[in-house]
Each structure stands twice: as structure tokens, then as C-alpha cells.
Image (cartoon, rainbow, N blue to C red; front, side, top):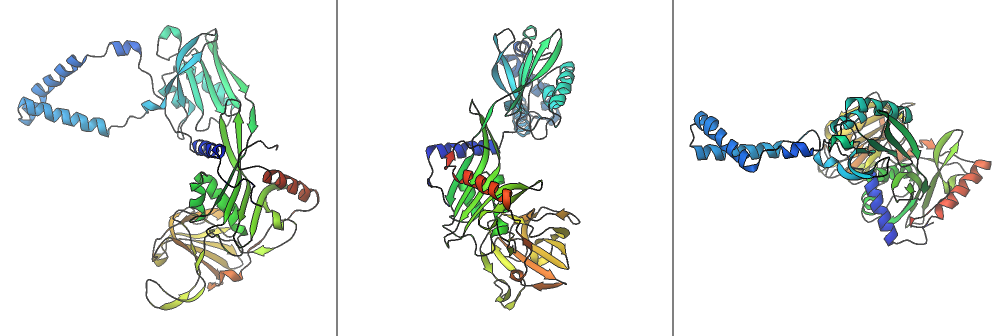
Length: 468
């Protein structure tokens, strides 16, 4: 059922903005700040100019046979080109000056560095100019508190020792924000550093996004402010249940995304909690998760108490060409179309319709980039014209796993997925094959699932609170 408030509000727009920011944390690297002493000892502009002209006169002019003026211009242009092309190993913009409170209560200036996707704690601290002894102590104690290590986006506030001026070296204190709900305070006592974990209260404030399909489903989700990774998850959850009809313009999407906030307004966005699709033909889909026998699965509200077989769709697009004889748009004559064509935007994730082994993955002539999966019982499925392949031959893939992305490689007039089902080596009509049975609930599980679903449907569009 569609939410009562089916339009964007100011709070919803703010929620979408925070979603995009959290889903794409800045990947920054640390740098060592320039000390006041180094800054004071830097050559003046006049001294640098004199040195530059002297080198042009004594080195470049004799070597190239150029007048001194031309040699100076040559050297200047070379310096500009090198300075433009050179990219330092560390990003100067990665750190920022922040106020730091010392143990005595006074405020000093420090720097904040951020863990990047390819960074280690030791590497970031070394780049920031922290001494090797302090790096060893901090790394050992943080490892004991967070065995899995710091995730990308974790921040480190470093305060220099007042005796060392602006240079870090042996730090005075530091604060590491390991997670939204965990900070690690590092203080110095008797020459040694001590790391103390500090829990931070967080509150669950899910985001509900509601909108209408205006082009394809993936692009419409992104246009509504849904991060790409969550849009992919939404399609992955929804696709197995599109056994009849297809997603069309005017259909409404509805999703609830887990989110946590601190009292200061810091946000961490989690996974999908609810997936809904309300179609113009009257077919509504409502899905949420429930744990049964130790396994967390998605269940469809309308069928959770019954059994139904269906063929999982690899993408949630319109069927543009069915199985059977047809006129080939490129070759210009009638021939057998041994599969089904799905319209989808370039880059749309393509899902495995059933668990199986990757038999082939790569270029396949007129089919372009193709993946072939072997499912057992002499059944095989193929996915063609991909823009990119996401699996390798011999790999075991699970039902619903992304095997590639929609493209137009090979003999294709535009972006689409050509999907085939083979049995005993022969192509058959994909619509004739039931691949899986939806999981079902009963008794206490069914009652608990329905109660949870009711709570999720009560979440209005935008930000609110919900009890877990």
C-alpha cells in the first residue's frame, strides 16, 4: 500500500541529501603539516627568482644554444608542465585544521585525517608525521579494540605536543572515530599513550523513499536520491518476484532504508528494510526480511502464507522481444529468436535466475560479452550483450547474485539483455521453466513477520523513528 504522504517534503529532501553523502564517504589521505620553522626558513620570492635566472644562464642556455631570455622562458614552461602533471602521493586537501581540547581543558589546533579505501592506520599516521613509537602504540591498542580494523571514512583527530610547535611527532592526544557508535580516545601519561573506547548513543531513524518510474526503474530510483548501491539492492530483491507483467512508467516504488543518527546529527546509512512496488495494473509487491532457521530472507507479504513457483527475472525491464520467429532488425530477415530480450538502462545489474556454476564468461561473437551458467539437470542460462562481466568461469554464483551489467556489445541496436534457457543443449522458451519456490512462513514466524511489516508500512516518507 502506498504511503499517505506520497510527495517530497523538505525533510525528505534533506534525508536524500544525507543518504548521498553517507553512501559516498570522501576518500582522503593524510599529509604532514608545514611547521612554522620550515615556513620561516623558506627562500623569498626574490631569492627564488635569482636562482631560477642563474640556472637558465649557466645550464640551459649553453646546453641548448639558446639566448638567456629564451632559456628562461623554456625553463619556466617546463616547470609549469611538470607542476601540472605531478600529483603527490598524499592529498594536501585530505586533512583539515580542527580545534582540539587537551586533557587540561585548554584548546589547541590539530589536524583531522581520514582513512581511505586503500589506507592502513599505520600508513595514515606516518603520512601525518606521527613518530614511529606513537604509531606502534596506537596501532597495537586500536587493533585490540577494533580487531577488524578501521573502515574507510573513519576519522582521526591528532593534537601535537605543545613543545614541538606545529609538528606532530610525539602527539599529545588523539581521538579516533571508528564507527558511528564508537570513538577511541588516546591520551598521553608518563610518556606512554593509552587508548580508551567510548560508546556513543545512536538512534534508529529510517528513511522512506517513495516515487514513480519515469524512464527505467534504476534511473528513476537514482533521480529520487537513492544511492546507486541501494538501488541495485532494491532491484535484486524485487526481481525474483516479477513473475508476471513488467515495470512500466507510472508504477510507484517504495523503500525503507535503515539509518542511525547521533544526538549531534551524524548519520550512518545501512541496508534495505522494506521493498515495495505498486503497479498501474493493480499488482502490488511488498517485501520485508525475516529470520527463519537462522537464515535472514526476503518474504513477499501477499504470498508469505502460500506456495508459488515462478521464473526469476534477471532484470526488471520490459520484454521487448519474446521467444520465437521474428524479423531481425540488423540482419534484415526472419529467423528464430531463441531467447527473450529485456529493455534496461546501460549499467543495470543482471542477476542470476538460479544458483549455478559459471560455465563461460567473456566475449561470445554476435552475443557480445556473455555469461553462461550451468544449473544442473542439464539446464543452462545465458546472459548476453553485457557492458561488463562480474563473474569468472568456474565460480559458483547464488540466485540473485550480480553476474554482469546491461550493455550493447556484439550484434545489438541498443542496450538490452538477451536471455536464453537451454535444456539438454537446446534453446527452450524461458517462460516454460519454473526455477524456484518462494520461501514461506507459518505460525509464530508468520505473526512476527506481519507485525514487523505493519511497523515498516507505518513509517512516513522522510525521517522518523522506528523501534527494532
